[in-house]
Image 1: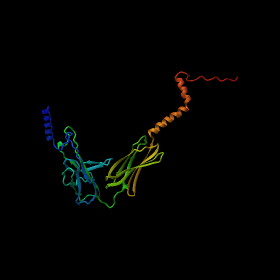
Image 2: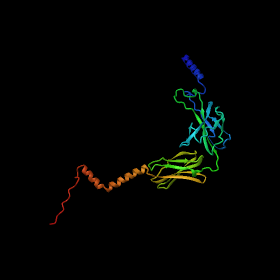
Image 3: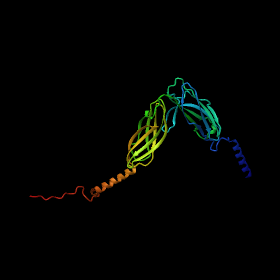
Image 4: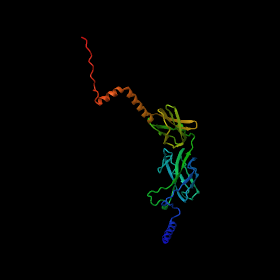
Length: 323
């Protein structure tokens, strides 16, 4: 018995010595956490003049984290504000002249590492806004992952660059176009989705404060939801979706989306009818009760006909005739 206990203890000690220190108890998977500052760079640049920016990467995990930096173009910004990256070079892409000085870095646990980004705009760069993203992707060996898993997810983080060659006249929200606002014609329950599609036809990005408002109904409701500061890419279209979850009483409402920039405002609206399902069911039941009492004699006769107690067409009484 003592020999078996000693043998098991020795085996556990040997196993613990053979396990790498950076592998967790759950098959070897770890969860590295990366931070970056700033997450967004909005600066003015001069054609032909080199300019440098510094970003700081921080490792919040417990293991050393090797990262590789690369430049990607931005095709659009999604409904949730997340940029969609692309390898294609677009007219407003800065990916071809935005460079990462030290592309490969190792960030130690709890420490931060500075990375230099250099912008080299061409001499003939026209006035307008240009954008790109710097993506820092983790480079992890196989023992960082769960050995039993078929899928390996590499953590990454990005810094967005929005660079502008200034001009004498810059666009405002009044130069934007709300090409459509969509809301259901009849709403029976919440949450209610209000979708607005906004076009920026200019060569410059435009920033504005966005807000969605629902007003109207039997109680003259006026509720607003702040979407926050939004950015619209040059010569692009962006879609905004706002979910309204408060209760709606029956009535006619107006849903509107507002973009504000200082004292300049752009608004679009659409109307809809709210018919909550509770109200609809109550209306149907009430209508049925009214019809029942209004035609109860006919209903009673129809029932007696069905059970055979009365003929479908009762005989008419003979009227006396005058001679």
